[in-house]
Amino acid sequence: MKFAAIIEYGPDLSKIAEIRPTHRQYLGELLKNGKLAISGPFVGDSGALIVYEAESQEEAETLIANDPFSKVGVFASWNIRPWNVVMGNPALLPK
Image (tube, rainbow, N blue to C red; front, side):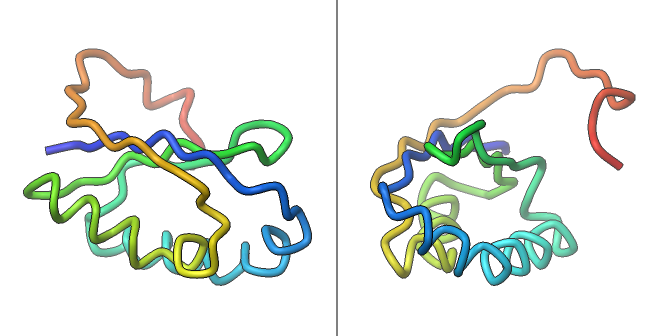
């Protein structure tokens, strides 16, 4: 099942820049292991959208809690909700 996380970042842009490589490495591992559907920051680094593939709400919460951005406080808040994909255009997604 997919879980969409709408995330708000804290205001420390230098911390975001510093931790971003580790955060993206973590997301890359999730992608490789079938636990990430899609992700990316909002313009201006105010937050992000991450869509996880998880068995439960609890698993999705664990995935976000283990993210390096979460561990150092870049994620100021988030809301995770179960999400059903109805339509999509793979041609518009990054390769």
